[in-house]
Image (cartoon, rainbow, N blue to C red; front, top):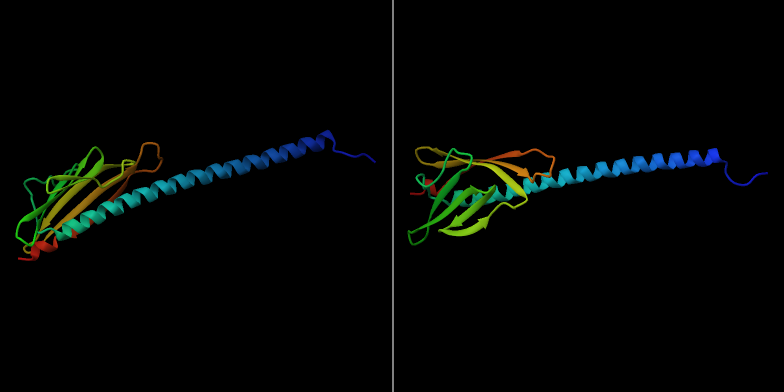
Amino acid sequence: MKNGYTLVEMIITVALSALLLLVITGASLSMSKSHDRARDFLEINSTANGAFSRFSRDIRRATSIDVVNSVLNASDGKIVLKMKKEDGSDDTTVFYLSESRVKELYNGAIIGDITPSTIDISNLTFRLFQMSTTTAVRIEMTVAPDASSTIPSLNFYGTYVLRGSYIE
């Protein structure tokens, strides 16, 4: 009786082990790519959600829009919101697109970026709708991850009514 393996048995064992390792490596790479795509989608959605939350809060508080100093219906938009304080004076909030980031000014002071540097904003359009007693703003924003990502840009939309516009 012989002990050990033949050369053919060893070659078959090594080949099957290599094939199994190849399948496992392919599955791991596929899962890694899927994870990266999911992370990019999550970051884009989180960025859009945060920006639209800020837009919503301030637009709903606003009593009017400074149309002269705003840039409406353009992809590099800017909106200047006026809010009445208790003493009758105005607070001013400005949202605008600069260097692929959405930025905010409050009473002339730079608050900073409201979108992270890892995300590019290629479109920020403000559209004004005025009815007899109310004013609304529709916002369109195109968000993309950095250049290394494989996912496409996504468009986000929101419409908000200036609650203060009908309080007079």
